[in-house]
Length: 177
Length: 110
Image (cartoon, rainbow over all chains, first blue to last red; front, side, top):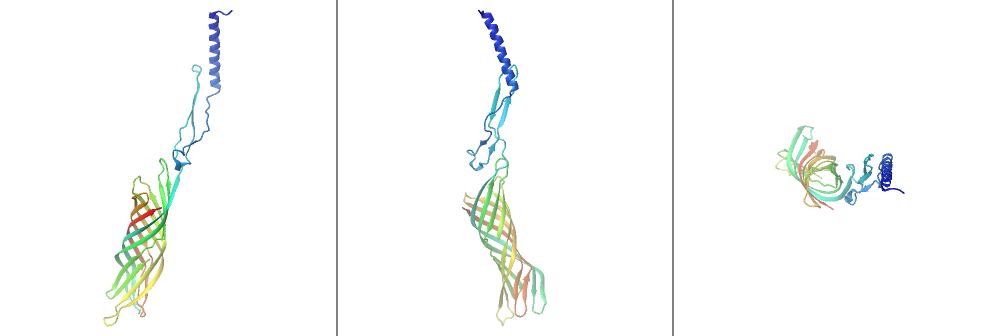
């Protein structure tokens, strides 16, 4: 027959043994994480579907005196700074230009091979209009990355008018398309 | 003229840009002279095709998600100018036709 004192003694021995075994098990088998390891934030940033976050595992070793093992897998995202999204589109437009036209290196010749003016220069105020069709691609960056965009215009038509009075009796009008 | 632009993001509604352009230009010249009071004016016309190029810098401002305004500066070299030659041999030429532009623009994105 086991007396109450003997029972408590055996219970303490059993409890201590279990405690030590648990502690040893915890020491020889450090905490492991669980989980797939990939987190998709596309539901938060649909345009950044390439954004992924790697898991960060934190574990706590236990000591013999604290036979409690904790294992936490925190879905903390690492800084994402290398992915981009592209938003692009086409555009049409027009431009009005207020211009200073410059004819440089003017030479006026007569039929006898005589040059009245050499390396002349003439300035005139003029106006121009233009029509354009373009394509723009804009990179959408996130966090510390700067945004940028590239555009290409094509089909631009420019009209310029240039008036150069060479001599009182002579006029040169240049229109540029 | 085909132009390419780089837009900077300065965390503002204004969006600075720089650009380069290359294209074709046709310089059309009308050269008129008045030999004397008793004779009518004489005019000759001539076209010269050239390779043109441009440098541009400015800023764009979006008024809405579709409409974008533009204010900038542009330099263009249209190439040489040649008036052609009168029967007597008179002519006018210029090595370069430059243009310094203030550009006001409006674009519609779709």
